[in-house]
Amino acid sequence: MKISTKGRYGLRIMTDIAVNGEGCCVSLKDIAEREHLSEKYLEQIINLLSKEGLVKSVRGAKGGYHLTKPAEEITVESILKATEGSLAPVACAEDNGKCENYCDCVTSFIWTQIYEATISVVSSITLRDLAERSIATEKSGLECIKK
Amino acid sequence: MKISTKGRYGLRIMTDIAVNGEGCCVSLKDIAEREHLSEKYLEQIINLLSKEGLVKSVRGAKGGYHLTKPAEEITVESILKATEGSLAPVACAEDNGKCENYCDCVTSFIWTQIYEATISVVSSITLRDLAERSIATEKSGLECIKK
DNA sequence: ATAATTCATATCTGCTTGCTATGAATTAAA
DNA sequence: TTTAATTCATAGCAAGCAGATATGAATTAT
Image 1 (cartoon, each protein chain N blue to C red):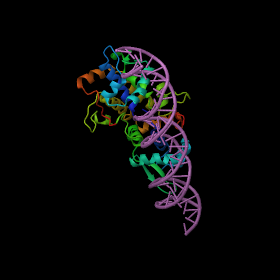
Image 2 (cartoon, chains in turn cyan, brown, red, purple; image 1 turned 90 degrees about the horizontal axis):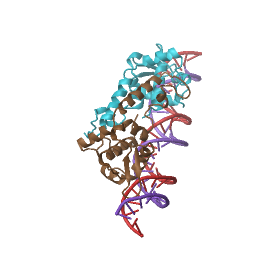
Image 3 (cartoon, rainbow over the protein chains, first blue to last red; image 1 turned 135 degrees about the horizontal axis):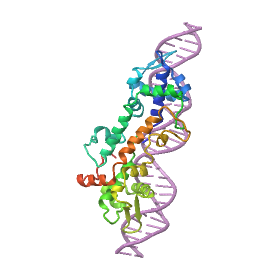
Image 4 (cartoon, helix red, strand yellow; image 1 turned 180 degrees about the vertical axis):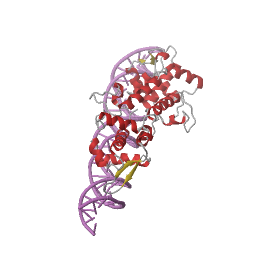
């Protein structure tokens, strides 16, 4: 039941772009320096965000990435889904407990409830909320998790 | 954000004992047969449940395991915690976002909210609920997840 | 004694995580 | 037109985890 670095760094990348990308685009090099993360690793993660259409890339010198939508229209759910994959605790939980085998096991309601509770949380938080917190605390580069 | 076989099998083991362990104890061999799971693998999992005091073992022939409390006093939370470890999506989420480094990062409130929502679900469901469902549907051996 | 059980360790295969490495393609600026 | 800065693409790699399997010792009812 853990969120990996992909999801956590994904949120930091997006927050960084939201805070620092006024009108122009932000390079991965800058993000990596500000967030103290490996640029090469971030390339892989931002690729996931790009595939989901959350950021757009600009190639070449002075290139970088920018958001495709206003920060208030980008949910934490969409960022975590792009980077982590499904947030369901088991595969079938997204289908109200009916998996492709159409079984309805004793525990399926547990997974569905956990999934729905989780989605309820992350779909109500937007990138704008994170950006505002980041600006307010000036702590965007910090993260509780070691490593 | 996935629940592993340890957690899932753990719930099945406990449900099986709750349903089939009237007064006496239930052997792992019987559980493994009914649930179509490897007896040897279940040994490892029930050991986790035993360490947490959710089941008590009886050694020797005609031995097995029995619950240490009535099923309605055993929550899904306690079973998953014993088998999966912490249900927090990141390590610091259990401490209201204050990790041992005492940092308060931009995303900590997300993890805390997910954690609390999850705990709210699993702490409200008891083994008795699962046992009743199992008896009602006669499907205790089924599980949505393949493998 | 014997068979059935739990308990204790050790091992193993495949997959995932969290990177690092190399280099090609693209483009702004000198 | 060269150069430097960037994204894009692919590959590799060490460590750990998942999901078991294997072997055998200790315990106990029959």
